[in-house]
Length: 185
Image 1 (tube, one colour):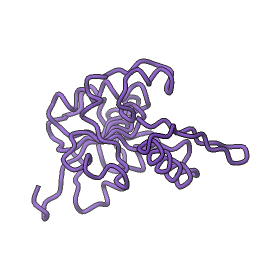
Image 2 (tube, one colour):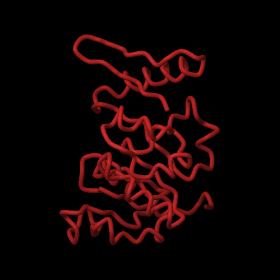
Image 3 (cartoon, one colour):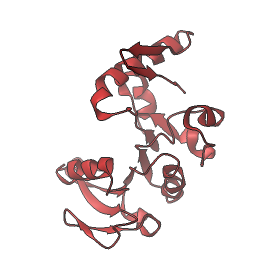
């Protein structure tokens, strides 16, 4: 993509909190144009001037990058279709955060829906995985337990990754009534 052109992007799950916020940010960004946005229950309606379609009807080929804001456990199926269409994927669910498919039942309570794609995804934490992110066909966005704990969880995640890289096991951080349990894949 040339620096003076905008990249067409798609958003799966645009009617949820994360999807709406991402759509707002992308719509205001000079480097992107919205190719499509999906919402199962609101298909056919307009959201901020964008006609929503069902995820199964999304014109994947019209986007260079597709963001999935679908719930964990659902996102993998649609991201599989995105990758099969030869498009880059950015997953905001937890579906591609761990490399080991055997770890998903322990951390997320279910088997992974697209384990064959796990190796295509880089963990979207540039402080630690910058080299893997360059040219990646998929990015697994680090998650937060709530929007208010973003800084604490990101900091704890970076620390846990650094400990893991030095051979130590990932710790469990406890502060008051909340904690951050840091699976690092």
